[in-house]
View 1 (cartoon, rainbow, N blue to C red):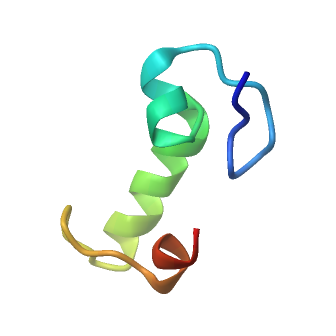
View 2: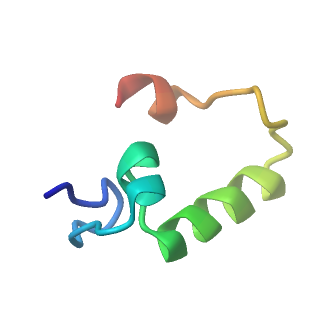
Length: 50
């Protein structure tokens, strides 16, 4: 079973497993990206390092 790369919890949903983030962590990640002004196709250095 996969775990969330942000919080380490076990992932059960196939969509969460594919993106490697649980639903709450994914929402937080999206909010953070919006706050710093990244568009959908832009990546941060942290995204590249994973």
